[in-house]
Image: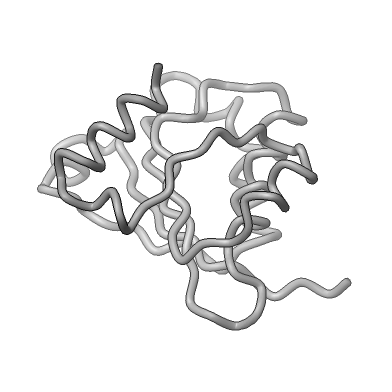
Length: 129
């Protein structure tokens, strides 16, 4: 399974004690709350032109998993635009509502060589309740 692969990668890279690999259903408030919050939420290759509800649930889940008490927290998103960028606009719009302006990063020169591959760091906004 993908989770087992992630656990093995964490082990092989010597970071298994510092990371938590767990299933997370986007938009399931109880399941998300049960996970708690994190310093870093990593989302890689998760957007595939989903319906608006699914895409916005991903953005809301990312935000809910970030610390809301002022501690530093970030959601790191790896995104490959492919031909579906317009379909993924609802995700980026919801991120604009929930997060500060993203910081783009170049990782290993990859993003510099492929303009369709984005590495974005999102810092959560403090939302009014």
